[in-house]
Amino acid sequence: MSAVTLTTKRTGSRRYSRGSYYWYIIPGLIAFVAVIGYPLFRNVQTSFTSWNGYGPQKYVGFRNYERLMHDQSFWISFFHAAEFIAAMSLIPTVLGLIFGALIFDFISPYFGQGWTTFFRASLFMPQIIPITAISILWSWLLSPNTGVFNTMLKSVGISNPPNWLGNDHTVIFAMSIMLVWIQIGYTVTIFITGMSRIDPALQEAAQLDGARWWQRFRSITISQLAPEISIVVLTTTVAAVKIFAPIQIMTSGGPGNATYVPSFYSYFNFFTTQKVGYGSAISTVLTVILSIIAVGMFKFQNSRGVDL
Amino acid sequence: MSTITEGTNSKKWSPARGKQNLKRKGLSSWLVFFVVFIIALVWLFPLWMAVANSVKAPKDFLLHGPLTVPHHFYWSSIRTFWSDVDFPQKLMNSTLISLFVAIFGVILSFLTAFAIGIGRIKGRFLVLGIFMVAFTVPQESLVFPLFRLSISTHLYNSIWAIIVIFSVIYSAFGTYMLSVVLSAFPQEILEAAKVDGASSLRILWNVVLPIVRPTMFALGTFFFVWVWNEYLIPLILLADNANQTVSVSLGITSGEYTSDPTTRAAAALLGIIPSVIFYLIFQRTLSRGVTLGAVK
Image (tube, rainbow over all chains, first blue to last red; front, side, top):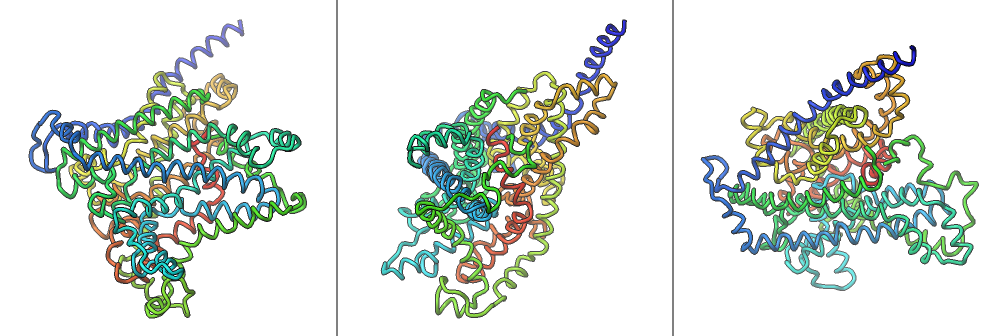
């Protein structure tokens, strides 16, 4: 008797709660539609029009997209984004693994908590500073005559150092240095957290077998950190493809179109030349590319047993 | 991910506890120490340059360049930028925006994540998938429609537009994070509460909330920093100087001091200082939280 009441009670309460839980998703869904869903839809819709941002929109079908195909600036901007993937994703991942392992394997066990925290904090600092402050700082460091880098180069005898941001041969390189400086803090932090997850017995066993640090780093650390590495590469790649503020502040896409990137090129069409339809087409293409990466990330996370 | 749920122990990332059980240092460890020390100095060098040159007299700069230590403290550059952009006002705007986004963003994330992780509602995978994509959407795809929308809702040029927009965008991320945490919530506790006839609201308030509060705090800290550093959407939606944030005012004035290197250094320094202070206060939460979402 009592067992029966218990069961009915349970199913009853579960049915009741299932329904009641749906209420909690309503604010989130409404907000999502208003702030992301609807604007995104409008952006796609605008990409099929010719529009200056205020008057009436003129429907032009796929003409904006056809123009994109033949627009050299559009392709160049994606090429530059690929270059920034190296600076923001690949190099920081490699350096992050090495720096992280040095700190985790040497500083932490031999020199203690204090130094570990100091080194981690030094590398992490650029991660929390506003990108606009970093952009001002670095365009000042890189400035041609009174800049810090050129003063140093002059002091070691290079009499005619380049105008880093003003020369289309050096601008990507100079910005890449800055981007590596920014990104390391993120990769190092994630990798060190990952390393503490690895079973120390693995390292100790290898050490007893006479494996050198470099061998242990290659065969244990890197293979054990595979999930962290994949996620870091994906998230930093997304960040690189989205890069905007440093470009807008430091170079405005220049000199010429030497630092055009997709985000900046669509912004430029929106707010400088006021070809809003064309700008929307660029940002739509960018959205599609990033969404593909995001779906990949979501699938990857779920395959790793994030059970819901 | 687990790093924030198990938030309270910092033992995780540092095997070395206290000085007594440090290993004996060999030559190679000193060599590594030296290398890492140099790397750290290289990383701090740009920040040092900002500090040194923003308190350097222009004449001193002209004579000795950027690399030297200032001969005496000179506050005018900092004062110039401080009053030129009305920095206290910018700090106020940024603080208000960041605070409200942290609060609203976390609440919104929590409500949706509660339905997904605890309520296990149908279609939760779809919702999370959409949110994940939404969080990756470039702001360029939203900025023009949001600009038009803010005009028609009379929120253009209001910090409330920024608060609403980023609370929602970040909650797409926060929902994912909290859903993962909540779906690992012990089922027995929930069953017990249900058997006792607790409503979903009581479960939310008395059972789930106390346990995920540390995670929510970490999430809020991150939202605070993220929105502090946002640039494009505030740049477009906050037209009036009086409503702008620290980040936007730095971005806009960046070109104004090209012939005045010490004031430029001062501008960079003023942008850096609030974030560094915030970092020093919330250091543990922040460095733990970077792994938030990166890895389960």
